[in-house]
Length: 317
Image 1: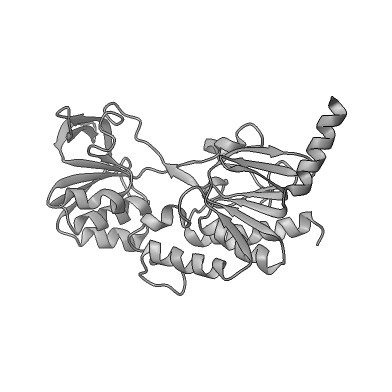
Image 2 (image 1 turned 60 degrees about the horizontal axis):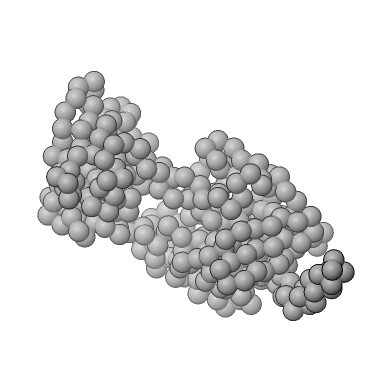
């Protein structure tokens, strides 16, 4: 029986297409890696569960990617995609359900089947971090949002709050100020971490109020929709009347498929070496999913390029 199974497996392998590299995730890191890998004559498969572009497609305006000043995030990713599509890269829109990290052959399973490769590059990105307060789950999608460009239009003429003090929070607040009556920016610390240019832009907007040393304790609602948040501001408790709350306090890496299989660092981000290789030989990671000091489109793209250099080194090419 075992010999029959072995022969069946061998026969099946003859029909399975073997790739040099399978890239999981079609954001800036994954698409850049696909481009570099194709130009290095590697046989590449790119798997994306949704649409290529990652979180960038939800960014209203990108003003820090060289050569493309003040470009819409979706438009920038369209340029990425068009460039990749000019290369001999196989792209499949399938959700990966499991990965098997063998010593020489890696297997990637989707709902449609399985694919094998000599190396894997994991670029699954990250998701917005929840506030973790009472009422958040209750009103998720009913006033609680994690994407200003996705949901901002629903709050035209209304009062909303953006929770966070980084670049994303500042960008979201500026975007929402275009349509909302009033935008509060709730910052935990006595200062914002956002770029100085973004902070200046916010302070120039008459309908934006920045509230420092402010912590959200609970999201309130009328049973159907958000109507306010309980906050502690400079040590004092108060309730802020609102129609919507936008969380922008960070991200959580999408590491589920590799959990327990590769080494991770702070907050679950994947640990890599200088060539973006994980603790498992032949398994690489890039973009927002890895431990790094700066998460931007340009650094994700750089990660993808470096990872392919690591793959070629791993192949001894």
